[in-house]
Length: 226
Image (cartoon, rainbow, N blue to C red; front, side, top):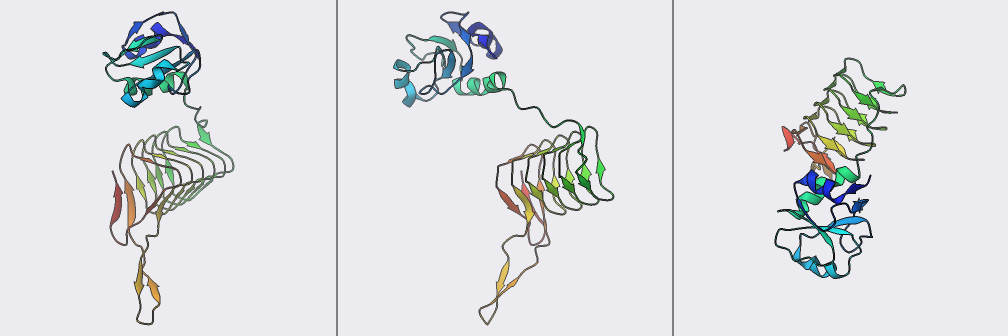
């Protein structure tokens, strides 16, 4: 979606230097930008690219010297650029509200309003899912798991039994939450005996877990992520 430079500046509370009607079609790094794109300069080591960048305009600090390019002046160029990313590149549409016909839901599980449950999702027994929870395809939720309002669980995630997850949490693809911790006791004969991992995992509100991460359960008590 294209915007004029003055429209972009208004969105972020910046001041325009140059043609306010310049059309901006996208965002890019300063060393990779093409005509029609808006870039930013926050780190002094990238100042050299001001002479060579193909960008049509740059977001720059209040005192940054800029020649040749149109400018949006702001106190914090990096933060401003980050705010513009969802403007030019909106997030993908979420799953539709409802439960896919291939999902499997255990006995006693309760869901809040407007749940979005994708294909081949498996949810165990006695779980509690808050309002607007979104589970993408091929996620696995164990028994007695709780997920707070507006939590998003991406494809391939495994959440083991008893895990407690707060509100507005995002768990990226293929993470494993609540797997056994590494607990083995050495024996006299040189062997090892596995120690039961009887604890759980508690993830507080507004946490994001990256793709492919593992958060192991405690031996006793809880592994807590804040």
